[in-house]
Length: 153
Image (cartoon, rainbow, N blue to C red; front, side, top):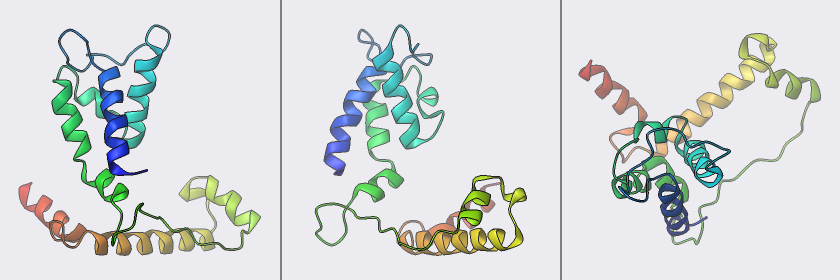
């Protein structure tokens, strides 16, 4: 999906989540029975931006909420293609699946076998390294943000 396409869809979703007279975000989560479209729009925004996102904006003007969500760094990075490409591609590596290991990954971390725990930790470290490399130009990367947050406390 292109960022422009998401922007158009987001505008419709935010509009569904707002009062038509005052043009502000609903004070409560829309009822699935009475306001099915609004409830679906609310849920989709929460799925993309994180649970509770729309609740934080209740009563605010819909245009400001739309602009704030549209400028979200994570979504913008995800939908902005690299090096003149039309779409941003997220590559997934193909590999062998070990049924017993796959099943153990569905449980909690504490329920995993030692080998599975090591594998998950390795994946997490690899993911963090890649994500911090991609954020280096933005506020000094993940480590820079952690240091900055520590100073604020």
